[in-house]
Length: 77
Figure: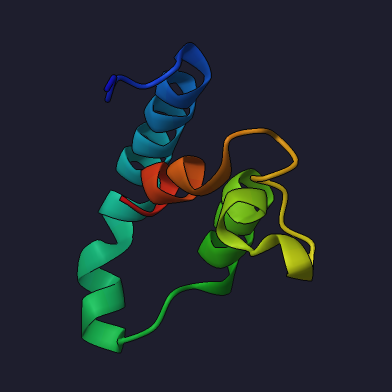
């Protein structure tokens, strides 16, 4: 059994990590103090990765992209 990521999954992993480092990491302290997520950050996250986070039956796109649950897990991680 091969547990390696496909090139597409690796690209998604890299993009998600870069987003987290650039957009989320600088806001962590503020978010923890306020116990909220800024709406602008939530919008950015959804615009880039919403299709992978939202189930197919509600309009998500990961299954349509052929990446399925693995893609969702990559983004959430």
